[in-house]
Image (cartoon, rainbow, N blue to C red; front, side, top):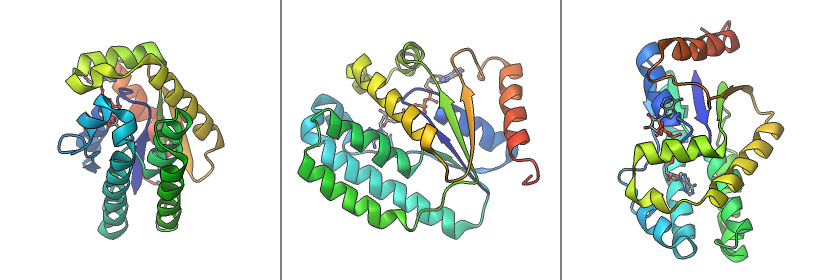
Length: 204
Ligand SMILES: Nc1ncnc2c1ncn2[C@@H]1O[C@H](COP(=O)(O)OP(=O)(O)O)[C@@H](O)[C@H]1O
Ligand SMILES: Nc1ncnc2c1ncn2[C@H]1C[C@H](O)[C@@H](COP(=O)(O)O)O1
C-alpha cells in the first residue's frame, strides 16, 4: 500500500508522516531537505536557483517513485512528485522566477517521467490557511525559510486548492489542520486515524 501526504510548506506533512509510520509500522519516505544542495541558495535568490532546485527535487522524487514500485512494502510518502511540477514549478513560472524556456524544458522531462508514476492508494491533503503555515514555519525555525513571503505561500495555497479540486487519480482525503494539534493532543491524532481508516476500509 502506498499513502502520500500532500500540502503546503509547514502544513505538518513530515510530522504526520513520522507519526503514521510509527503507528502503523509503515516505511516512511521523506523529502530530501537536510542534504539538499540547492534549497538554501534558492531562498536567497529564487530566480537564479529555481531551475537547478526543480531538477534536483524531480530526480530525488523520481528515485522514490522507483523505490515504491520495487519495494512491495507499505509506504507512507512525505509529498509527491505531482507537487513539484503542478504546484512549485508552475508557480515559479507564474511569478516570473522560472523562465518560459526552463519551464518548458522541465515540463518535457516531467511528462516523460509521469508515465512511470502510479498514483498513491490514498492521497491525504493537509489543508491549511496561510497564517497557520506562517506560524508552523516559524515554529520549525529553519533560518533560510525566514525569507518565505506571505505572497509565495498564498500563491502555493491557491495552486494546491486548484490541483486538489481536479485530482481524480485515486482516493483522496482532505483534512483541515488549522485547529488540530496532532502532536500534543492524542484525540486530534485519533481523529486523523479514524478518517484514514474510514477511507482505507477494506484495504487494511
Ligand atoms: N497540526 C499540527 N499540530 C502540531 N504541530 C504541528 C502541526 N502541524 C505542524 N506542526 C509543527 O509545525 C512545524 C512544521 O511541521 P512539518 O511537519 O515540518 O511541516 P511540513 O513537513 O508540512 O512542512 C513542526 O514543528 C511541527 O511539529
Ligand atoms: N519542488 C519544490 N520547489 C521549491 N521548493 C520546494 C519544492 N519541494 C519542496 N520545497 C521546499 C519547501 C520547503 O522549504 C522545503 C521542505 O518542504 P516542506 O513542505 O516544508 O516539507 O522544501
